Length: 428
Image (cartoon, rainbow, N blue to C red; front, side):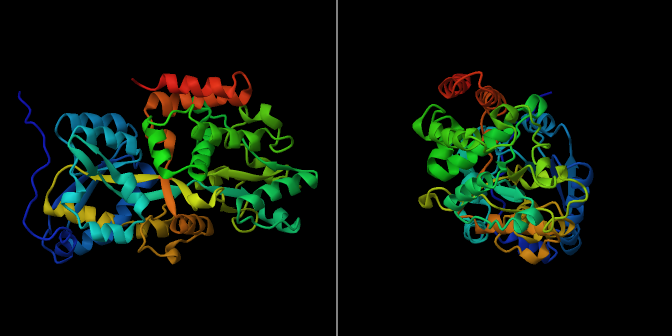
């Protein structure tokens, strides 16, 4: 059997780009099916399907989503076998980039209204969706559900009773760190143990510091392997993390405890009475590891990890889902256009567990203080960048970067050795 060579279908009609969503709401695609694949299963799959119902009922388009826990393997087989679904939801842009390089993905520059996209996303989201195709840059996808990592959690009740104030600047955060120590306590709760994935929590910190101490261009070069780990820019970021973590009395349990404390256990001493440590930087998912009886806004709260150098603004480290288009038909364009609007995640936002990156979304959609606060943090960001280790080749991002940083934190190797070893592991 000979397989037909797959190539994205040529543009469907000589009409203005980005008008298909209006056509969909006018009923022009009633009865059409748009297939999707992605990683959403169980509760997430239900929330996604529920959030699509309003669109489906108003347009008559049937969005058929197939979620898989083995998504990365299964989607590769479908795409390489020239039988991709219409739209694919990638939680890791690095995986999408591999298919973009092979020319498998429809360039949204050619099928969507770029003015509308630029009006509804800050430039960073468009930059992160722009990838290298076989013949130049391609706009490979639009962003749907996202989450933010640049949050510092603290035990609110005890924090307020101690008279501490939420820091707005890096200097204020460092002053708070010193004040907590002067009061006889330990400021930071840090743990990076995570079984086979031990070390990922430190890579998040390094990514935060890269965004705060050097340019977005350097961050982008770093995750592509064009700026070495041993470069002054990366070494400086790691050194700044080290200075904070290894400073006398800064971290609960000291340097030795960091590599052996599970990331989910790290914030638990915040909830002791009195707290054993007071500040914990982590993404919004960490609340699932907090004591069940702890209430947001009462027992705990969070603030944005401030910028360090004003010239780099207020960046936010993010993760999330990017939707890419593999088959070009009018109804598929309509769904992609819909995904570029806040309305596409409104239902999920209201159900909890989703943050919108869209400018036309509203803070009043959020039904809990944590999601609303993270959403505001992302909306207020001057720039956003995706988790760097997720963008690197697996041998580095989920391999040497985790491993060498863990060895460095535990003191078994020095920083220069760790950085050179990571550079050496980069696929040639």
